[in-house]
Amino acid sequence: MKRLPISLQSLIIQGVALCLASILNYSAPIYFSQQPAWWQLALVQGGIAALLSYLHQQPTWWPPLHFIFLPAILLAQQASVPTWFYLAAFLTLVLFYWSTFRTRVPLYLSDSKAWQAVAPLLPQTQSFRFIDVGSGLGDVPFYLEPRFPEGHFYGTEIAPAPWLISRIRAWSRRSQVTFMRRDYTAIDLAGFDVVFAFLSPAVMPALWEQARVQMQKGSLFISLSFGVQSQQPDHEISLAEGARHTLYAWRM
Ligand SMILES: C[S@@+](CC[C@H](N)C(=O)[O-])C[C@H]1O[C@@H](n2cnc3c(N)ncnc32)[C@H](O)[C@@H]1O
Image (cartoon, rainbow, N blue to C red):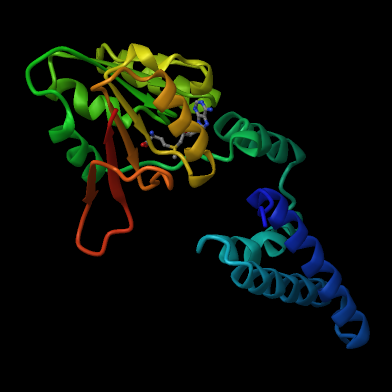
């Protein structure tokens, strides 16, 4: 059965946990002052939400997030955080995570082990065009650019804040990398010899189809961490002993 997007799952988990914690609170009333009773409710709700998240096999960082969610709100209320702070925090999150709800690909960053593993797969002498689809802060093309003078590097990013940060970084280091603020699904991948993606399992079937239809024969499609069920890769590189990340590459 198709799973709901993680944000919706989490909303439901928080709601169910709040109902269960309220029932518990009501059926086993706590004879303290109002303050600790609220705290008790928040902590019990957090514990139930974390347990539900674990049982629902959400990624490992979700149970702790569920646990602290309500206590954090309570803490902020008690610390009299000014209301503009919530608006600012919300806007910051929107600018970084933009349409994650739709794309199902949040911002998280690859590291130097991955960039180092990509380098030997690229053409060593001839000119080529490389694009990172969902380029985040621009780290992948920034690492490769000085190592491949024959390469032309591009990144495309849908969220405004990471895109702006990568543009500022390019400007400050006098980089020639071109960062576009575009949805990669609207880009014709035929114009690139190497396409790199670090996205999420949810989008891999559609991205593979896009690459299969658009990319030229002989070009290279690279995916960090997420494979394609319907197609065995030509290269499969583990990034370190026991590492969670694997680099997959397909010659089109
Ligand atoms: C997991 S991050 C990877 C960032 C970067 N490539 C790296 O390796 O550090 C994925 C990025 O893809 C962006 N993204 C998701 N869907 C996208 C889309 N349809 N078009 C462009 N960017 C997208 C997200 O905003 C996020 O910044």
